Amino acid sequence: VGEEEIAQVVAMWTGIPVTRIAQEESERLLKMEEALHGRVIGQEEAIGIVSKAVRRARAGLKDPKRPIGSFIFLGPTGVGKTELAKALAEFMFGSEDALIKIDMSEFMERHNVSRLVGAPPGYVGFDEGGQLTEAVRRKNYCVVLLDEVEKAHPEVFNILLQILEDGHLSDAKGRRVDFRNAIIIMTSNLGAKQLQTNSSLGFRAMGSTDANRAESSYELMKEKVAAELKQNFRPEFLNRIDATVVFRSLTIEEIAHIVDLMLARVRDQLRAQQMNLEVTDAAKEHIIKLGYDVAYGARPLRRVIQNMIEDVLAEHLLLGKYEPGSTIVVDKDPEAGLDIHLAEPRTPVEAR
Image (cartoon, rainbow, N blue to C red; front, side):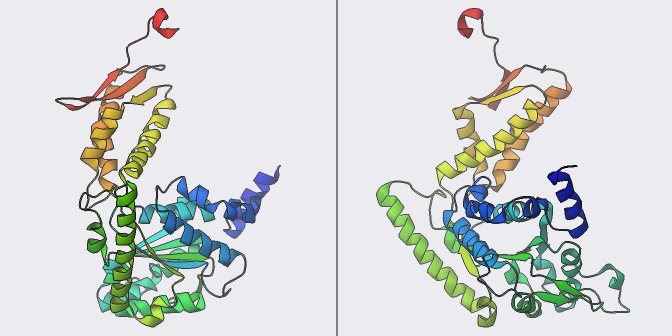
């Protein structure tokens, strides 16, 4: 029995992730930005703000009664807000399973608010516990992602204020639920339309003059979004948030990097079956053209790769067209969009 086995057992008993027991946390926290950038492309400001806030908390420079960190994520759709929350859950607590996501648009009406902490005694659902409190009670080392928080009923913010200020919440059964080991992330679409108009083409320009213009435009957008936040949220709520993070629109280089990451996952899956995957630059450009949308960001890229590459590969694999050792090539086809075929076997002369 080694250290890892002991750490696994202790983690199972306590609910504390193995990485926090087995590794020197200070070393990991100092490399936090690097780890998060492995999953979230671009967004240096966002990753830097979150990492610094977490380090402050772990260094003991914050109120020990409050959650590890609390953030509002703002910005266009599909630029990495949810992905950063997932990456944070994996980095801090060892797994994406530590992410608790709640759609706040489900709590627009006053009578739905009680579902967060549980139905009162005598009402339907009393035995089930609260949607928020029960999830955190069972897994209090977690990242809580409250999506589209601006849509929630005003009474929801009284609950959030208690979490952010006191670090705990009582459910309908009177049980005290601890939020001190949680990271609270709220996403909002406030100002998203203004942020989308940051670039008329959807991509941020990368020339020196254009980059300076984009930077000043981004700073202006941050000011406008901050003003909109003050109009929609109470001051006492905003004052309890550790940081408001405005995400940028993505550059063409960042979109290409995201495509590479998505294709790498497909490549790894084929490699497990002893097959190789090669994707030409022309094919990648075609995927970007079809999959990037100003309104939805990089989100449609996943669907394009699934429909145009993974579905075809799945069909060919089931038909037995590929064998172990095969190299599969994805190229641009002038008529059909993408052409997926086996690489021609090289002759001995070509192989030299």
